[in-house]
Image 1: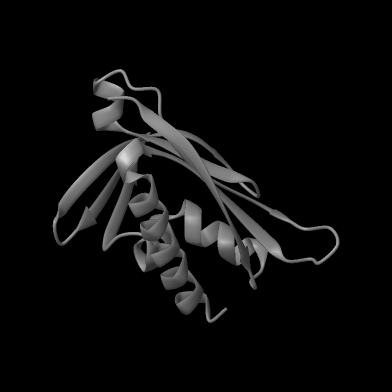
Image 2: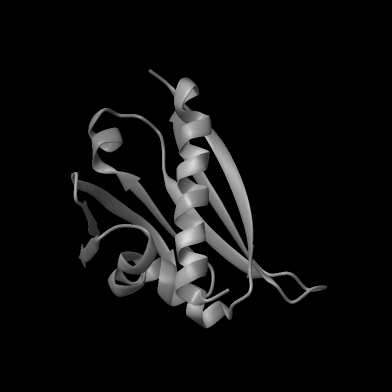
Length: 128
């Protein structure tokens, strides 16, 4: 089944350096995205109580983004990725986090809610 691309945008009251740490390091990702994260070469392992998911790191650019593809999709030949990209709004000086992800059509709303929950967790961690 094809997956459909969707995008979300969040405004965060934090510094770009702090956000960069939260989205590109195992310690940062473990604070809000999953229970435990490890990165070895180009493989990211995300662990939750319910199990683990493995992803391939596609790109990581300091002061810009991190992008990965779930190994399950890669093995099935499904062209998907998950990208967390951020920038500073020049007018408001607020850090803007853009998330691009893919989900099956009947799972898009659930996926968006999950991202909102995860970003709320990040905001609590940041105190923002």
